Length: 360
Image (tube, rainbow, N blue to C red; front, top):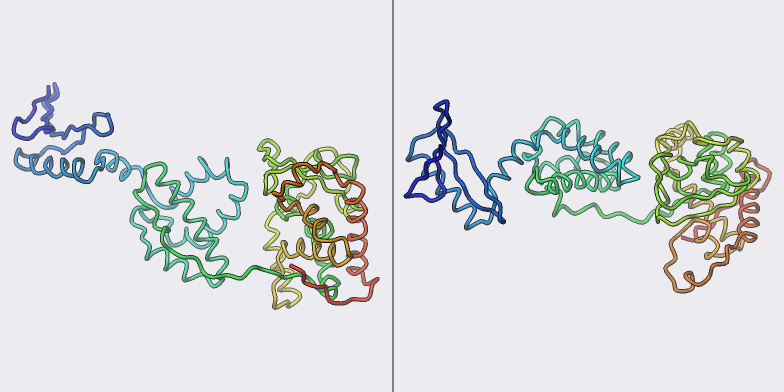
C-alpha cells in the first residue's frame, strides 16, 4: 500500500503486507517514472530528503536514481578495465593488447583496487608523472581515457578524469637504421622482425600474418577489415592491401596452408628492446623503425616517394587515386625484389656500408 504525503509531492510511504515500511521519492525524468528509496526514517527526515532530491531533479536536471545505480555498479578501476576489455575493446579496437599492457603495467598496481569514482585528475597526473618516457606516458593517458570514457558511456561513472589533462610534447620519430646498424642487428632479429625490414609492412600486420592470405606463394593479400575468426586485426586504414613477397621474405615465411605464419610473434617491441640492450645501442630501435628503414631504401634506390607510399599502404585521398586503378603489380614486384636484395646484402656484409639518408 502506498500513502502519498500531501505536503510534499512525490514523497511516498510504501507499506508491504509484511508490515515493512519505507519512504520513497517518486519523480519523472525524461518521461520515465523513477522510485528513489529514501529508507526507514521519520517523517521529518523523509521530507528533508525529498526536498533535496526534488531540487536535484528540477534545478540541476539530474537523475538521482540513475546516479545511485551508477554508484553501486561502478566497482573498482580494475573491474571497470576488465569490463571495458570484454564488452568493448576486444570487439572494436585492434590495438587493444598494447593499451591493456600499458594499463596493467602503469595503472593497475596503483588503481586496481580503488573505487573508480574516487580517481581524480590529481591521481591521473601523479600516475603519469611516474612514467619516464613522454611518449609512453601519452599512450598510457590515452589508454586510461578510453577506459573512463567507456565508464561514462555505460553510466557507471559521472565523468572522465583524464579530460583536461594535456599530453607531453613529443617529436615525430625519424629513426632509421644505418647500413652498419643493419649489419649489427640482422643476426639478432627474429623472423617477424626480419620480414618487417624486408617488406616495410606494419609490425602488427606482420605479427598477425596468415597463410590463408598468401596467394601463389608470392603475394600477401591483406584484407582491410578485421577478421575476428582468424584473429586478423585488419589494416590500419581499413583498405585492402597487396604486397609482393621477395625471395628473401619467402624463405623466412616458409610453406603452409593455414594458420599464423609466425608463432613467436608477440611483444615485438619487447624483443627489440632486448636486442638493443644486448648490443648496447643508446638510440633505441623499435619495430616501426625497421619499416621506416625499408621505406628509406625505396627512395634511396631511386623509386620515389609515390612508390614508397603505395607499398607501405599510406592512405592517399587524392582524386587521382580514385580513378587510377592500375595495380602496379610489375613495378611493385621489381621494387620489392631489388630493395630486399639490397638490404640483405648490407645485412650479410656483402655490400660496403654507408649511411642511410633520412628522407622522412
